Amino acid sequence: MTDLSISPLMILARRLQAQAPLSHDDLAAILALPATVRKLRPAAYILREGEPPTYCAILKSGFAMRQKLTQEGARQIVALNILGDPLDCQTLYLDAVDHNAQTLTAAEVVTVPRAAIQQLIEHRPAIAHAVFVNVLIEASISREWLVNIGRRDARGRLAHLLCEFAMRMEAQGLAGPDGYEIPMTQEQLGDALSLTSVHVNRTLRALEAEGVIRRTGRRISFESRTQVERIADFSPLYLHLDASRQAERISA
Amino acid sequence: MTDLSISPLMILARRLQAQAPLSHDDLAAILALPATVRKLRPAAYILREGEPPTYCAILKSGFAMRQKLTQEGARQIVALNILGDPLDCQTLYLDAVDHNAQTLTAAEVVTVPRAAIQQLIEHRPAIAHAVFVNVLIEASISREWLVNIGRRDARGRLAHLLCEFAMRMEAQGLAGPDGYEIPMTQEQLGDALSLTSVHVNRTLRALEAEGVIRRTGRRISFESRTQVERIADFSPLYLHLDASRQAERISA
DNA sequence: CGTTTAATTGAAAGCAGTCAAACTATGTGG
DNA sequence: CCACATAGTTTGACTGCTTTCAATTAAACG
Image 1 (tube, chains in turn red, green, cyan, orange):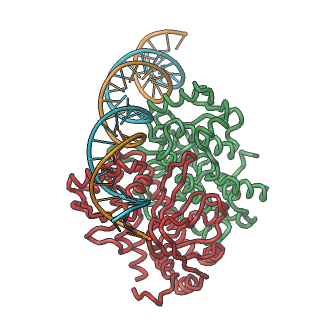
Image 2: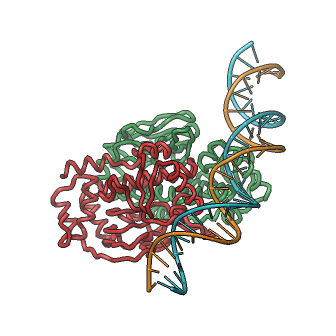
Image 3: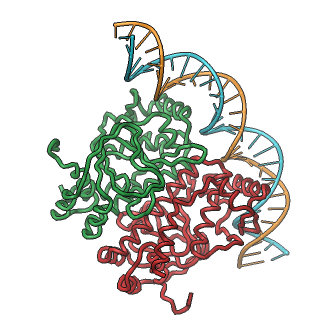
């Protein structure tokens, strides 16, 4: 956790190392990547649907989302991203970006040319493995989101998002027992959950009134984590955190 | 299209070749994989949530789906698979299967040990590339499904599925201008679209009454493809078929 | 401070769900 | 070849969760 002199590429290295054990050579290769850091304001676009992918961005600070818009202008948030998440491994080998990526908060992004990442993957199996795992976990999360939006009512759906976010934040050391600040408006929560902001509001207050969560501004904490997880029908298998934790232990 | 003597692994080879140009050596390596063919009856499980992944299955004939169940027993179908689709590249590098895979119809599946595929990927960049593309396209489809379920009403949602399925079937040569037979009951359609079978029925009949689709049993054909695509807000970018087509042209 | 954005609340409307029943197709055994 | 069973489709009436519309309050920001 020394910080100022740290290479921005350490963010990427840490994430990949969490997914597969990397050799010193692998690490060195990652740290030798050409990288630039960009500071972004809230709601800034990182990727736009339809454009050809040219670089890969990793979130160094702040929060981001991926979203798609329908013809009628309705927005569906299809993923949330936090510290260390790569933002366009999802189009690493595709010829067009199929969704938009946008910051939720002010954020810093480490940018690496796509070709450089591709080369790394081609020559270093361990890195290929780690990137692969990252992509697979994201895919798993979006399957769970389908279940969440498709098969749970507003209460369960919201509770599920709160549980997922808590667990992912905790895995990055960004949340503790006192909860976390959720980096989105109730309207954005609605866009992620396919609810209106009005109903998100009512549902949040209902969970609060039930006494299972507490809120202070956008800070969420759990009065009874177990209760919320039961309401959410939450089982964390789909996050595949064990794999990461195991790899972390190995490489630690 | 010579058929009887054909190796079941040609199914896999064709699919991968459609995603990235493969050398003769790559092809030979694929065809040398240890493979077994299994015949499955309708509704047979191919993968179960929670079990450790041990092999990779490719659909040789028939149709399959991936689904997850909630605690309350509601089912959400999160993906549909047709000829040539690999069924568990989604857990190729994960330690637990996070969803169920099940046949829709009678089907044949080519089964390859996971370790063998992993080795191939490690030693052959072109194959790694092709498998990666497959996984990324699946992820893209599930993002579009999130939009579909989250942001379109029953009419648009159903129309969208009909368009997507038509296009994917056509890409595999399984559907022509006379439409295609959709390999699922209205209840299963409902499980894929987050609708009840009752409402799927009403919506299908409405589309038929509108005069934009025709139905004979489970055979669907389009009276006006353009109209249906407009209703569905369908734009095929997310299927990333261009990449496949390009690669096919190159390798043809 | 004034202005804008976000959160909150109430009342009414609507899309899809639920429940229940009839109808059709398919398949099986006698 | 028919009677029966089973699975799937179709239809109607009613209910309800969520949306829509509208207005108010609170918070954030320059």
